[in-house]
Length: 207
Image (cartoon, helix red, strand yellow):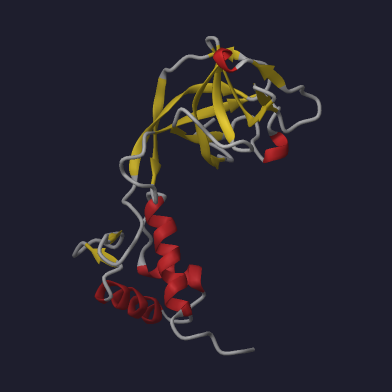
């Protein structure tokens, strides 16, 4: 087996910390040891201490889970909470209701982005990996490029579909052959935003 390139292990440790911290569960040193497969806890501690010295991490004294990402030397924005607003149909249209059900943490996005989340109903986007019960993270924007997945309002009803523009019409395409595309005049459609992330909860939160 070839030797691990210099710095690769530390990069993997930092990526592990990034994922766990942005997910709201900073790991302990022993959890880092287990996740990385280190034979000794001291190896994990040494990598974490080096990342602190390099400016990628900070740690609150006396807290086993006190690690946090430091902005200096790290490009990801700190996590922030965005509202989970009701549901959006991936199938037949449903009346749009913006009721705040809760909040979700989002990291790694520019802090000025206007983001919100919606829980998906229906099966018209299964071909794009968006299943019933999934949560989509949406960036509010009035336009999108053809081929992007969007949340759109048709009258007072909302849907998530893939956007296409053809012959002066707006087309909202499903990703499931059991559903038909919607072909609409531009004045009948309002683009709410672009889907930038999909989250799936296997149990508990999000269901």
